[in-house]
Image 1 (tube, rainbow, N blue to C red):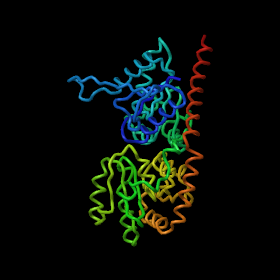
Image 2 (cartoon, one colour):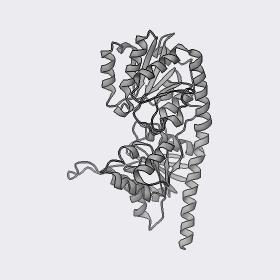
Image 3 (tube, helix red, strand yellow):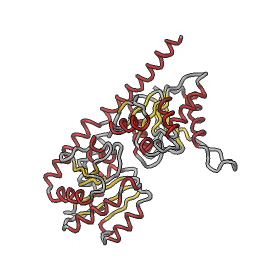
Image 4 (tube, one colour):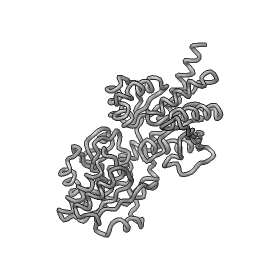
Amino acid sequence: MNIGITVYPTYGGSGIVGSELGAELAERGHNVHFISSTLPTRLTELSERIHFHEVEMMTYPLFEHQPYSLALATKMATVARAERLDLLHVHYAIPHSISAILARESIKSKRYLPVITTLHGTDITLVGADRSYLPITKYGLQQSDGVTAVSKFLKKATIETFDFDDVEVIPNFICPNHYKRDTTSPLRTELADEGETLLAHVSNFRSVKRPVDCVEILGKVLEKGAKARLVMVGDGPQRSACEYRAEQLGIKQYVTFAGKKANISDYLAVSDIFLLPSELESFGLAALEALACEVPVIASRVGGIPEVVTDNETGFLSNFGDIEKMSEDTLKLINDEDLREAFGKAGRESAVTRYSASEIIPQYINFYEKVLGARTASAAERS
């Protein structure tokens, strides 16, 4: 198949999943065309089967903001015709599904281009649910030829918010060979001394991720006499608040702010406990990546996280904002190496058996074939 993929090329779950999906599809013999403003974060190299088409925007004094949605639709239509795409797969509903539908309509006299929309979370729970965007988001869902969501929680939220239930659940995935434990890496000695437990957090540092809670948790376990450090990977609006809180608590020397990293797996591979105290997670991709690296997860019992992290088996779940319990659970794992190791092995097994690329990518391919088959059948009926 010739597949067009559009993602937000920034540091975030939807961009990561879309990029890695394209790479996995290319490995299976499909031709993948990324259509975006810049090269997606995880797309480190192009190949014979992976192509990138840059969306260029016109600068004109009349426009206070450049009309990206229209530029994207134009590029989608151009690439679809030039490369004879079989379908467009867009990640994140707003504005990608609308742009794709516009592209489809603009070339339908020549050929029909099916549009598949994958929902990742805030496009439904936050952006799409906003009154100013709700009607157009619902239109995008209804007009898509196929819709998928990354968790059962997100499908339920889509039904409740938009009264739209034609959604296939296809979860996020990991490559087991890429995400695995590595106790020999020199990065470990850079981040923590021998005998110290290394806590980790990975996010875009938005307030919904509650990254400051991670600093609070570290502070509490250090108060109890535990030897621990925290590495925070990523960047965003809450980073300065984390740095300030660490300074207030007098634990700044125990926190490493690594910034944005393409090699997140390197950091997870050497960590001991992963912290994800989010207020909302539609799936929790970072938690899944940690589990694959045999790292137990301390997380909030929200959204799709309970679908990924099994409480008291691969980690501990708490009500969001319950820093006291999260700190106590973290101490349990710090003080009981056997328990930490058991949780780690169970997490790895869960991640590999339920969420490996070999399990999930065929689900996407089957869904593509289902959508294309339905379109072919519909065209035959009309003729």
